[in-house]
Length: 545
Image 1 (tube, rainbow, N blue to C red):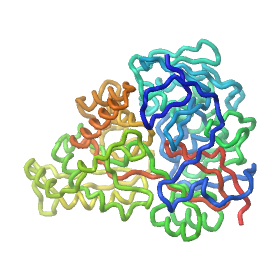
Image 2: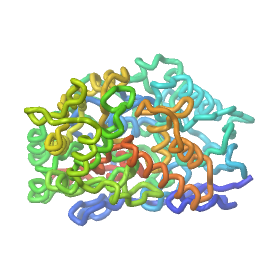
Image 3: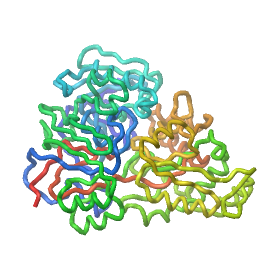
Image 4: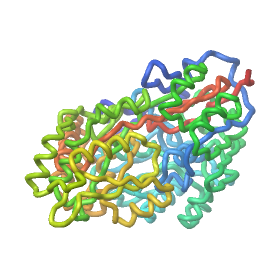
C-alpha cells in the first residue's frame, strides 16, 4: 500500500511512500503571455479584507449549474464556487494536494484508493460531510450515466465504496486506474448534500445544489443572471488557498451579457468588475486602458471537429483525412486571441504528457484534393464536390464564440468541402449532439490529465465514442494508458492514441482554448485552478478609484 498526500502528475512519476500534513500552501497561477497580468503581479493594494460583491459578465447562459453533469465553461466556473473536492491540483506543478481529504493511500496495484477526510466539514444546510457523503455522491454520478458524461468516465470500473467509519472511505476499481487521483481534484467529482443527491437531474441543473463550498446559490434566472452569496462559517479551503475562514467577497453576481462591446464598456466604466468573455478584438483596447488581463491556456482536448462516422459522409475516410489536410492552422493565428495558439496536437501544450504532433497537421490542400479526386469526389459547377449524387456538404451547429471557424469554412470550401455554419443557443446544440444526427461536432474539453482522450474517444463498452466508430487499437492504447503508472509506458500509449486519432481523421484539431478574463484594478486575489476554472475564494475588492 502506498501512502501519500502529494504526488506529481506532470512528471508522471510512480507514487512514492510519503505522507504530507495538511498545509496552507500558497500558489498563484502564472499567465501564459507577458502581456497578461496575474493576481500575483498586479499592483499591490491594501491588505485583503472582506466586503463587496463581485460583478461578473458572462457571454452565454450557463444552462446547467450542476458540475457533476455536463456543463459549459460559464457553468463550471460558477459551480466551482459551490462545491469542494477531495484533492486539489497545483496549476504550476501539477501536484495533487489536500483539500477535503487530508491524506490518502493507493494500493500497489492501483485499484484501491483510501482517503482520510477532514474534520468539521459541513454542507451549507448544516448536514455533515463524511464518508457516506462520498459514497452517495459517487454512486449517484454512476447512476446518472450519460447526464454525467465526464464524471462517470472517471469512475469507470468502480467495484465498491467502503465506509469503515465517518472519516475514512475506500474506493475500489475492477482494473488499475491511473487517472483517478487527478480526477478527485475536479469539480466533476465535487460533493453535494443528500437533498441534492436525491433530487432529479433537471432540478439539480436548475439550482437545487447544496454544496460544501465557500459560496451558496441564491438566484438562477436563465439568460439573465446567477447570484451566489458568502457561506458563513466556511473553514476548509484547499491547501492552495491563501487564507482560512469565510470568503472575502459578500457575494458574486453573474450577468449574461452576450454583446462583447457592452461587456467592454461596462468594465471600462466601472459598472463591472470582471469580464469573463474577453474577445480578441477587445484585448488591445483593455490593455490600452491599463486594465489587467489574466489568461491561461486550458489543458486537455483542444477545439476540434469530431466526425460522426455513423453518418455516410464521415464514414468516408478520405473525407475525414481531407478535412485535416485542407485546414491552414497557422492562418488562424491573426484572428485568435494573443493568448491562444493553433493546435499542434489533439492535446493542448499545458496537458501532462503532451507531444507536439504538428507534422501530422501540415497544411496541404493539394494532397486533400488528390485524396478526394481518387475517392470519386468530383467538383461541380459551384465548386462543391459530388459523388454518386451526394454533395460534400454538411452542417456544423455550435454555440461557442469562435470566429476562427468561419475561416476554416473558407479554407474547406477551396477544396470543394461545403460546411454550413449554424450558431445556436447552447441548449439546442447539446440536444442535437445528444441525438447523434450531426455529421460533425465541435468543442473542446478541459482536463489537466491526458485521460481526457479516453473520456471523449473510447469506443469500448460504455465509452462515450464521439465518433460512433468501431473499436480498434486506439481504444486499447487509451484503456492501457488509464491503468499504468509507468510514466514512459503511459507517454507512449497517449502519444500512440493521439497520433492514431489524427491519422484516421477521428479528430480534426484546430485551436488551443485559452481562458481570458479582464478585471478592474479594484479586483485582487483572482486565480485559476489547474483546469483553468475560476477560484474566487481568495478574491477581494479594494475601493474603486
